[in-house]
Image 1 (cartoon, one colour):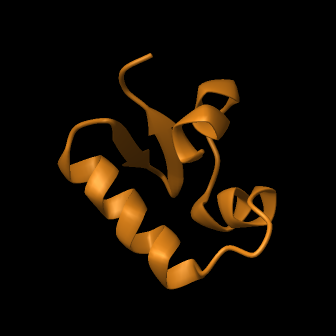
Image 2: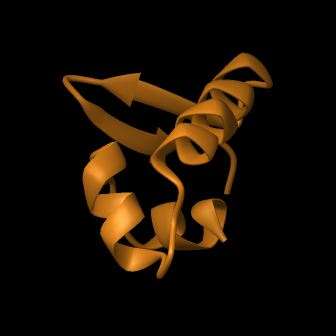
Image 3: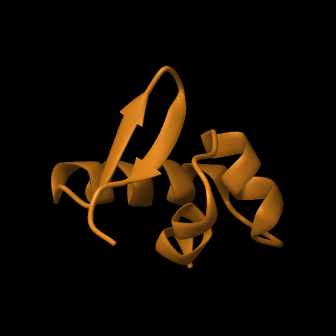
Length: 53
């Protein structure tokens, strides 16, 4: 779901959480970190962006 959202536009983690109803922010943070570690997502100036479309 996170990658689908980021395909539309770059967003901050809190903006991503707002778009996913009932999001646990800790789980979202862990998931974003995993996606960054795997090279799927990058964080620049507080905004998450997808690397591979």
